[in-house]
Length: 161
Image 1 (spheres, one colour):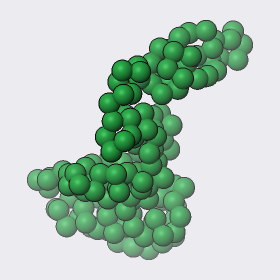
Image 2 (tube, one colour; image 1 turned 180 degrees about the vertical axis):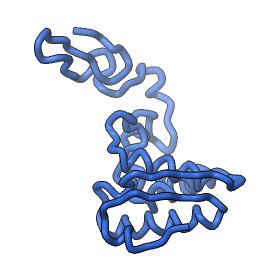
Image 3 (spheres, rainbow, N blue to C red; image 1 turned 90 degrees about the vertical axis):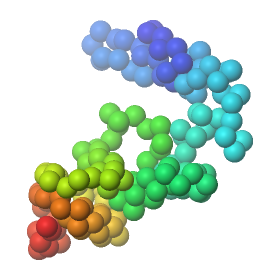
Image 4 (cartoon, helix red, strand yellow; image 1 turned 30 degrees about the horizontal axis):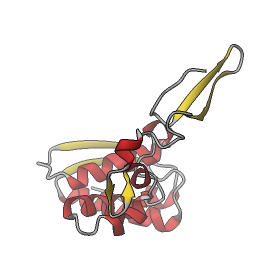
């Protein structure tokens, strides 16, 4: 067993099946040493906070304006169900694009930017697609050129930017 102490997971290598992940015995899946877990914010450890969804974190960080604004953007783009500490290699392509989009909306951009989005609506509910479209329109107001590739008829019928 390959021990990934304090990473939350441990890899078990098998010759023919690849590596299987299991909970790390050193940290019991919490990813931090006990002395770090003693430090809390609103009675939550860093491990608890990282296991919080974006939607739940909106309430947790309502007194932190910058953090709250970014969380609101992510939630409005249909990412509210994602965990704050979720590994980026577990995100779908659409989720990763929406996180990048939120980052760009959050940043005070200077315009003159081109974005190519490939199927950013993958896995989204219709309500979340509409929220995404609103965010895309916000980007075009910042003089950002935007091209969206999608098989969704609703997006094909709309002209963005």
